[in-house]
Image (cartoon, rainbow, N blue to C red; front, side, top):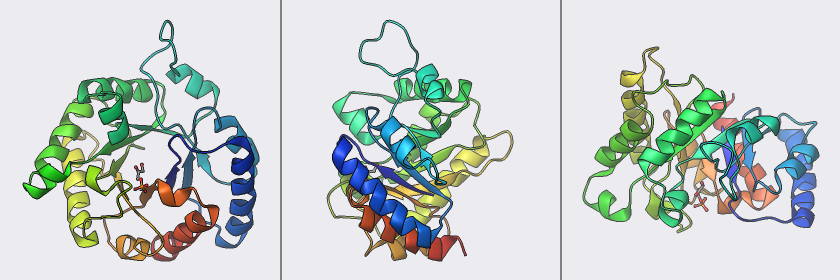
Length: 247
Ligand code: 13P
């Protein structure tokens, strides 16, 4: 699956142009595993503009419940909006909004309760990467966020090294492949039903490096920030994904 994370970007006019261009391109690509996570404000616009196409529209984040929580979007609002998936635990939420594993675990449980597909983002800092602590960090994030809870069959993990986000630096695709295998093993060994989740890679994916990632067996797709803001570039990446993984 290829997911666009638009973060706090977009406006009604440029979104319209984006959707029109994307629809033109998609008619020749025909991939079936595409997701877009626009801002909450633009969710209905994108859902409506792409309604005739097989594209999942989701949220970038969610709160754990509704009620007296000023500024929040609750899980029942997400259901009401008919969302297809929801990101949780993005490193920008962890860093800028001080979300810890305990809080992300509550978000995970809220999604499970409402039967919404969770995309749990995990990743290490550059310091942890340099110190060889990547796997330890990822295992701890997985354990604290989801282990001991119901593991949903449609759970997706997004591995996003913090130091690769928006920097143009990426780990080597072969190393990402090994890390993804590790992530799948950790989740599988905790899953009563022996589930092996799909694992997406995120962090400076572009159309030039995409083929090197998608050739790897355990890289099941990508979560894309900057490169998803241009409909042509995003379509190019989907085309590459489709060639490698959907044939
Ligand atoms: P970039 O693709 O801009 O590095 O962002 C990745 C990301 O944070 C997706 O969630």
